Image 1 (cartoon, one colour):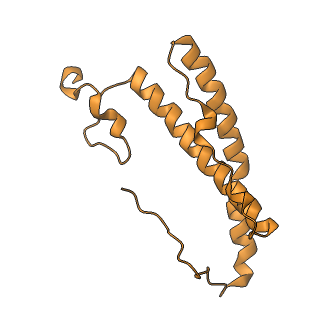
Image 2: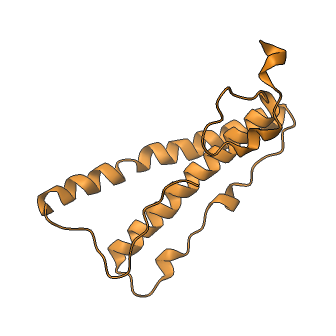
Length: 131
């Protein structure tokens, strides 16, 4: 199981260095362009590559959940932040699912060391046949 940051009730990020908040916001939100481009390119990749090789396509909508912004106690900035996080996590999960699907159908050979979160490789071919 991976490590997660779990917020505790009543705890907030320290605002000791308020001058750095704009820098933190810029560093977070500047990622929106690469995320959108990744979303577009991964979608077109799977439509072309999977279509040409008869690989079952990944349903994009299964990896996105937009519901936190509906919480009534969040202010508009918090809702925007939630929407951004939901989109970013969805893009990354969707991208990983597409790449895993490609790996399953295109290169099903085990690694020497199984990387974290690669349980889908359990049924892959042993390396010995290919060395």
